[in-house]
Length: 191
Image (cartoon, rainbow, N blue to C red):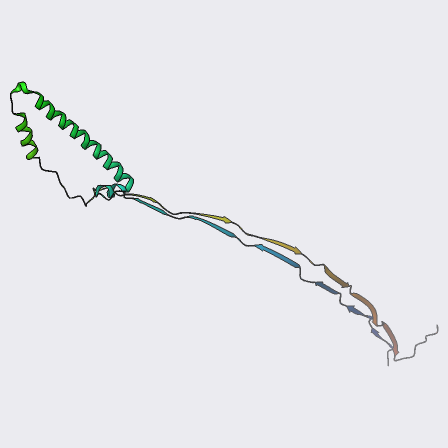
């Protein structure tokens, strides 16, 4: 005996997605850069060294005198000798005038004149120590700096931005379906 059967065959619905990806574009030109640099400067001021040598005293001591010093010293020596000669004549006159002493003043004066005292002498071509004076002024250096600098100006460029949004479309890829079949016996479907 054959039992009637109902056979069902079902197909599920399926959806599909169409996706368009979004697109983003960014463009930017390089920034405009302006640099102005001022160099540093250096100013050097130099005063040269100076050496002064004064050897007047040494020259005077070895009798190599300047004309004005030579003239002044000779005038002073002549004046001194003149005063000494006057003093000597006065002394001789006083000796001769003193007859009351009953001395032979004329003979004493003659002996004194004929036997003079020896002159002093010395080595005169070596000056005394310290007779040459030195005066030294060292070099002086002054350095002045002026700093340089840099001025930087940056002008950024604009950004170009383009954006295309994405899309998602949903569509029915397969419809749902239900198929029913009756297998086996006869079924009265009209009741």
